[in-house]
Length: 126
Image (tube, rainbow, N blue to C red):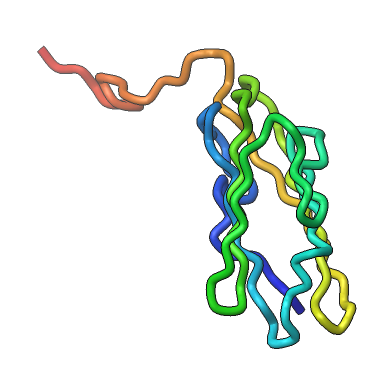
């Protein structure tokens, strides 16, 4: 069965930058990948349908050995504090379907405390 690797942003990741590209590798299981069947949805749009790409996105599909590296960059930034689903479907060369969906969340609208002094529960002394 086909699988994914190198997903970025990673599934379940939080605090994703608003201009992050979506990257993943479809890993061959030995049966080959029929890249002409690839469908990818992101930001609520069908970004890739076979060799057709939606307007507003830059797409790169690179073959590496028997695997495919896909990079999608939207012309628009993600929205603050939103959860985005990435849906991927393709087939191997014997007709088995591979379907997967994963999600990530962008940085929130409210500020995030990253450094504090004193540290959590640290006692101040004079």
